[in-house]
Image (tube, rainbow, N blue to C red; front, side):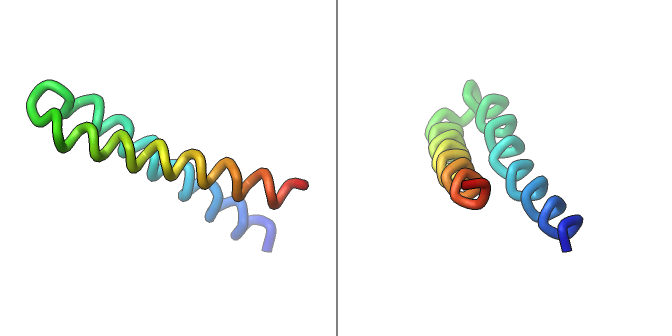
Length: 57
């Protein structure tokens, strides 16, 4: 059960990191798309940090 929770948390944190990488690589070619990716990644990171903080407290 704990291993499943660890896998879910790791997969959740990988998604915004991948979006940040894609957003930074597309910043020169497609700036509007890159801004959207970076905003979505930031929101996912903030929500994820709040969710993990709620689980730990």
